[in-house]
Image 1 (tube, rainbow, N blue to C red):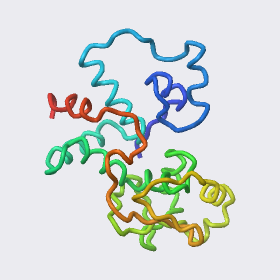
Image 2 (cartoon, helix red, strand yellow; image 1 turned 90 degrees about the vertical axis):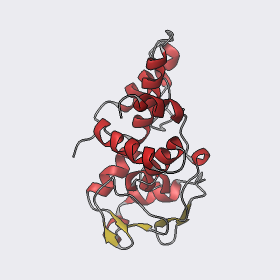
Image 3 (cartoon, rainbow, N blue to C red; image 1 turned 180 degrees about the vertical axis):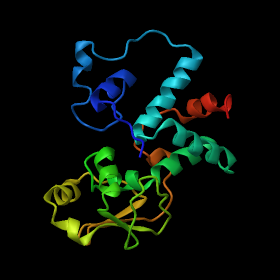
Image 4 (spheres, rainbow, N blue to C red; image 1 turned 60 degrees about the vertical axis):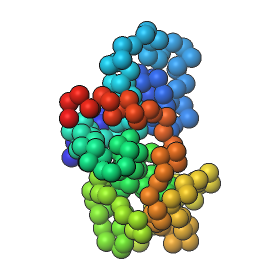
Length: 199
């Protein structure tokens, strides 16, 4: 399975934004170890926004293009559709629900079979979760202290499109997320413009 292997903090500094959600990701930014402030061309700005969005969800370019093509075919705004599709990836929802401390850890949990969808094991991080689907931690995996601590420590849970059940170690996608609810700082219109010339 192809995956992004670049150091997370270095990627954050290169992109000029904390895409991994770690509180120390931009610590060295104050020391000048961050992307320079040279003026970018229109293409450069679009490319940067595309790279940022890919980095938020840690999706490879080939797969990202598939999401863009599917979003273009939807009846709603392409940018909104793209974000919704990315938000509904299984690895992302495992992360949002609080099972993983990062999207990388969430992806690893999925691949290693720790996550169930509607009671059945799903080991594809890109699995598209549908409204009403239940995401839960496998019974055997509930003995893992790291997973439990992650899930119960997530006191700042604030995703209105996910219903979290702490007693049952599960979460449910109760509706499709709205664009403004996705906790990402990206101009998705520029991402769409970037691909409009090549797709």
